[in-house]
Structures are given as C-alpha cells and as structure tokens.
Length: 386
Image (cartoon, rainbow, N blue to C red; front, side, top):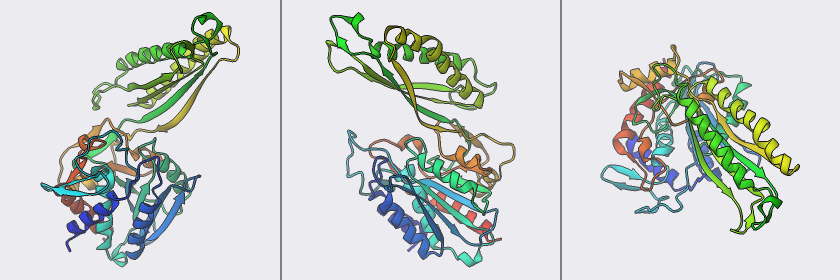
C-alpha cells in the first residue's frame, strides 16, 4: 500500500470518531497512540480536568534539542443543522475528494503525519520528530494552552513547529490573535407594566454592545502601515445577545458573546482597557444607582496570541524550500501557532485543504493536497536524518 493510500485509510478512521468539541476525543487519541507506539514513538497523554479529553505528545528519535513538531487539533465543529449529502462521520471518496467532518480541518493533516511516521526508521533520525495533537482548538485553543504549559518545563526543546491547518499548502507565517468573551449582566426582574420598578439587564447589554461597536470603529484607524492582513485592522464581532423570558417580564439576566482578533499587542491593550473603563466608569454605576446588587461580569473563554511574522524563521524557510513555494502570506483566521511561538519555537502554518471548506456541510480535502502534504512531511523527516 502506498503512503498516500494509507493516509486516506487513516483519514477514514479519524473521520469516524465524532470528536465535536463538546464531546470526548479519547477514542481518537487512543487510536493515534497505538499507531505512534507501534512506529517506535514515546507517547505521553495529558488529560484535561474532566478526564474526558486529552492532548497527545509523542517523540520519535533521539531525546535531544532542535527537533520538529507536527501539530494538529483533534476536535471538529458541530454538524447540527447542516445539510450534508452523506453521513458527516463516514468518509466518502468522490471525484478525487475525501468528504467528511474534519477532512480538511484538520484530520487530513493528522492522517498524513501518521502515515508518514509509519514509514520512518526511528534509528535513522539525528534529531527528534515530535507530534502534538490537541483537544478543543475550536473552543479557544484550550488544549494547546494546557500543552504549552507542560512544554515550558520539558527537558527537550524543539526548534520548529509545523501546524497543518488547511492553507491549500500555502506557506503562512502570521495570523491574528483571537480573544473570546461572554459578558453577563444582572439586573432586577419585574412586571413589564412598571419598568421603573425593575432594572432591565437587556437594555444595559444593548448599551454595552453599542460601546463595543464604537470601539470597533476606532480600531480601523489603528491599522498598522502596510498591514498585510485582510482587513488590515483588528476586527471585533458581537456573536450573540441573549436575555429575557417573556414579553411582559423585565429581564433580570442578559449576556453578550463577543470576540476580537488583534493584529498587534497594542490593540489588545486598547480594547480591554476601553471596555473596562466604560463598564467601571459609566455603565455599572448607572445600573447600581438604580439597583445596588446589579453586576457586570466578563467571562474569558480564551485569549490566544496571534502568530507574529518574524525576520528570522527557520520553520518558514524550511517549508518554503520543501514545497517549492516562493511567497509567504498571513491569514485572518487563528491557529495554535502563537502559543508554540510563545515558548520559543519557530512556527509556520501549512496544510492540506482550504479554509473555505472548513466548518461547512460536505467538508472535503483533495487527494492531491494530501499528496503534496506527504511530500512536505517526507522532506521534513529527511532533514531530521542528516
């Protein structure tokens, strides 16, 4: 069986694990663990607090510094309310495309990694090849955040990390960060016929959203000169506003779900300080003047650093040489790259499939993209053997 055929076979197995972020990924982690251990890798499993999810860290080759990390996330987004033409958790091959949830985001890359590793002679490696397969990337990169904390004290220091998010095998050296929050408002319920007798949490949530939109407009003027992102400024999105129980009840609870994607650290400081100032100096005092027990509490779901383009980046240079690409780019979507960069690794994003196919019904990855990815991974393994 060719390595490409084996990668397709593994991908079919991986798609069969319904690793939606709210559910466990342990069966898939166990499947990966068996393949890696059979290939001679040392595998360590790091479970989350619930014990229902886990990261996998594996090392193949000598235990020395300077290795290369192949990184991917095991979780996928939900399929509920999507109109699929086939079972999303059963891979379908049609017109040289492999269909299924996670096919490109990003089980296709993981399948290529595993198929390639099965062909390696661990004794031939002069530097180690590491694998980092994480949970809950789709929900604020929770798994990778936990993993990098472990890796900070790890005795072996990898040098390069290749993250296989779907880029169409383009070489990506930078992306925006992603900061996600839910802000909770507590007012006082009452009868809708006497609005002054209660404190309408939804009304103050609306004021909060209005301020977020003002901050969003201000971010446009802060775009760096010659910015390479599209759009070039930090974006801010309000994803949801929820509250109330009935037309004739003053809502005592409300919540706003929002996020922003900074292009620079200064914008993170700008957004968080502006929102905090507005709450503490304006909005909360207005609420508590009417009801002393009123509250505004912001829950941080995740604050993931962006991947900063660097003048010196061995990961970028290596993947450029292996893929034959001449250009590098940046993208607006976030990855776990900034987390690995924060602990001293050179990071590049390059993987099979296209982000335009991710999260949609009938998600797919082209077989030709898998073949290109395997060529890149084979080149990485060859570099570790010299």
